[in-house]
Image: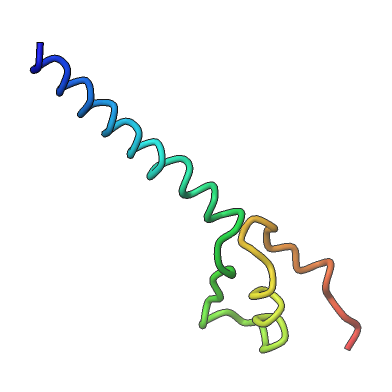
Amino acid sequence: IFEIYYFRVWVALVLWASTHALILLPVLLSLFGGRGYVDPESEGGLEQDLRRRQYPALLGDDDEEYDSDD
């Protein structure tokens, strides 16, 4: 009886940890995580790099909204 009990507890622990590591943690990091990655070899200037750092990665890369007539 102890073998079955400990096996079930171990499997439950592995499933619980896997769920958090593979599903919950990436979702939470994408919503509340740090700033987006800026490629140092990109062709954009300093203004574009700073603008990209202000928004999380989930917002996408829509540069057409922020084009100025300068």
